[in-house]
Length: 468
Ligand SMILES: Cc1ncc(COP(=O)(O)O)c(C=O)c1O
Image (cartoon, rainbow, N blue to C red; front, top):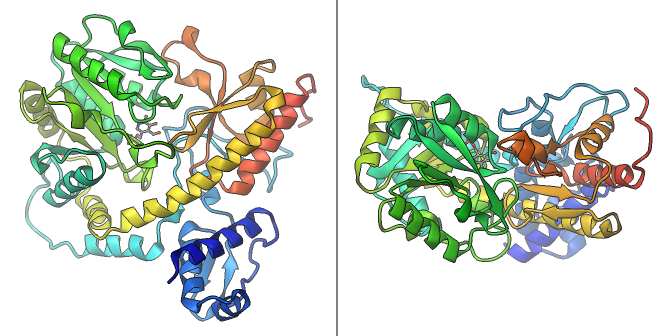
């Protein structure tokens, strides 16, 4: 199978769907007919159709014509229940919205979940079902199998290969933050990025931690602004959430020196390192650390599905904090069901997760360039997109008015739900103006429409609220 020809077929069909040439339910030519028409091998078309099916653009069934999926990729997920990580109100029906009143959820936090190849997903759950019954309690640290798979994966992709004993399974990043807070002595104060990840902050507060918001600049957390006396420094160095800055090597080393000098730990939230779109991936902080200061936190929420509630902590190689983390994990007990761990381990072991990532990376790259191109066209409005170097969201800013709240309200009237950048602020007085657009689960068509509506809203700042 010729990969570049496969990609060309995939692009061609995607564009036809995105442009509305092919519509929901339309049949595609048979693989034989398509191959003959394009003068390429049938296997190439089969591979392209499989990929398109995996991405959710089309549905293939044995013995029947492939058809354009009822909805473009991800939109069924986007319209589902809103996860806690997506800040803001739950969708409500608004009259005059496209497609029968359903709001299109373009808030960040939902990846292209449906792009996973159905056969890989099923085989992972079959593997979980085939686990032998045994009379034993679950290990609070997580299954050996999953911890080994994660350790191996980190060695391949993040530049450090921890011993599997250092890996502790968590119910996602948010639970990791609670656990870390509990493991810190006394009433801990944690420095967090401002703006930053809300669910993480909530988890820290509910575990009894006090938050100290630290401003971020184009290089990530502004180290000079970290107050003295903090017990931990929580950062997203790969892709600051939500503004998107990448912490350069010099600042990473400076942060590690500062942590060692002050005797504090550094918590590295590596939530979307798999999705660097531009530039070389930088080594994880944990890969640069030789003093045992870094606690590395990862999640399957962005690469697979946030509903799995599965993530991990890599504890420092030794020391009292590593011991305290294990004690806290023991005390809380196991949180991720063993069959879930088995299914995820299977996806890692068989390479299914890497194949999935290969597909979604292309899909995200495609959507990102559409956003960048559309925003560039709207340069006369002063519209700017940030955070597009990685991740699954963009931060959109313009020299107001209208205010972000007003723009969001009018976008919602037209059927699109985006997030207010102000909600990521640690304190209301530090809020920055802007809106956040999540494109992980969005279809290209919905993204284009949302940006068209945004342009209309920005071009007519004085327009009255549309009638309800
Ligand atoms: C900065 C950051 N970390 C982690 C996560 C994932 O959290 P969890 O693993 O709890 O689903 C997100 C999700 O939006 C995030 O934005």
